[in-house]
Figure: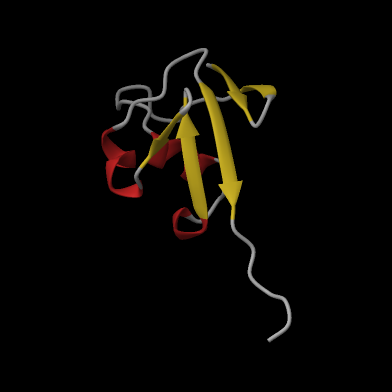
Length: 73
C-alpha cells in the first residue's frame, strides 16, 4: 500500500492482511507511541479514540505530528 506521510510517498505493508488496516495499526507499525502523536488523514484530524475504527487505504495522505517533551522550566 502506498501512503503519503508528511509529504513523502511511502510503501507500507500491513502484516495481517485478513484484518482491516487502521490508523492504530499504522501508528504501531511505524513504531510510534500513540499517546505522543496526532494524525490528520486526508485533511481531517482524526481523534485518537477513532483510530482503531478508521481504515487506511492506498493513496491516503497523512500528516503525523510527533510531540516531543523537554525544554527548560
